[in-house]
Image (cartoon, rainbow, N blue to C red; front, side, top):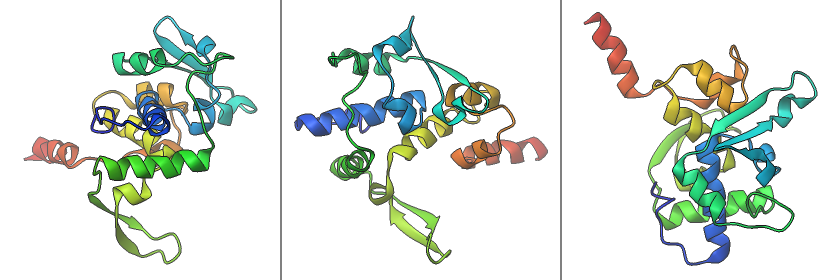
Length: 182
């Protein structure tokens, strides 16, 4: 919401914000997201075949569109039917970081350094990327609805081991679990 509601006057940055927020609202991989066209919007839903699965076991993905998602789609009428005004993946990720800094998404998080394997603290605005939109989609739903529902909208199979990488169990869910034995 902080990103969605930000007053961004730069047209390119405004478009990147829209793409990122839309991705947070539908949970698509960036590769699938950039291929979406108006034909993928059907009756208040976005429907597509997840590219990662199309050659092995095609997984059709259908996600209901929220009012925010619909408002973003309605902003654009791109010749050729593309849904949103995409740019290269690298530029997209660079601009997302700029937007996060602009709206002051600068809380620190701990992660493992990929080179040293040691924990390090970093600002979210320095590491945010398109993949964080997918994680946000899954994380916002996790613990509130059945994981099978989330998997059906994120393109994961029901028993996917990869699905576990996309969420962190919140302190609230941990507390709810402890309250069951207290």
